[in-house]
Length: 89
Image (cartoon, rainbow, N blue to C red; front, top):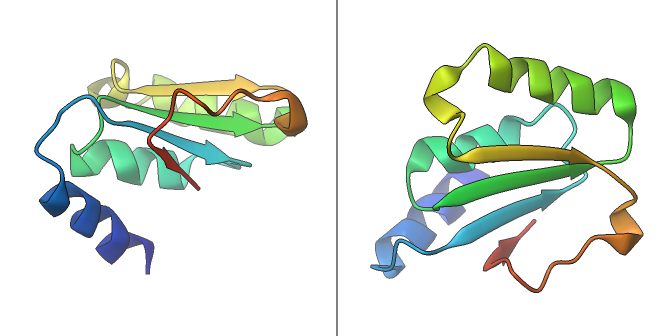
């Protein structure tokens, strides 16, 4: 499951410069999970559906703890640059 995969990534990496991206992030739950694990400097979600994007942004707004470590973008997933990320889901 995704929980054990994120924990394994955390155990294997000693570097704190890891970047996580979720393509098709929906309501942002995977992005928030990655941020909660503390393994990544930044956890990013891309979503093409404006309604789901707004829901993820709202969740981010009401959770100040993750303001500095999460980002959400509403854009076409086919034109999303992924070369700057270490983990892509």
